[in-house]
Length: 77
Image (cartoon, rainbow, N blue to C red):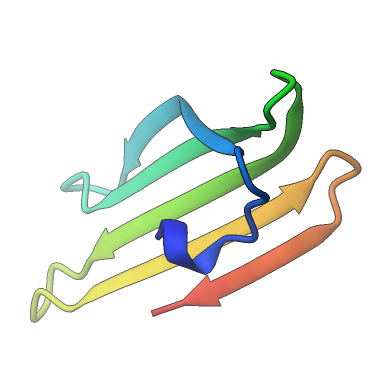
């Protein structure tokens, strides 16, 4: 997932939340903050990992937004 994000030199990811949803908790949703070298939060990331109950097909999605809510990266695989 990290390779899909736009990170500057020295930026780090910090997980701030995790939740599961679905009748069998088949979807995991992780929320991260991207923190620069000065310790400031510069953007947020939501990573979703879903495993289909029928056929066990796995889908992953990542959305990176700046602090104003503008989407910087949106990728699905």
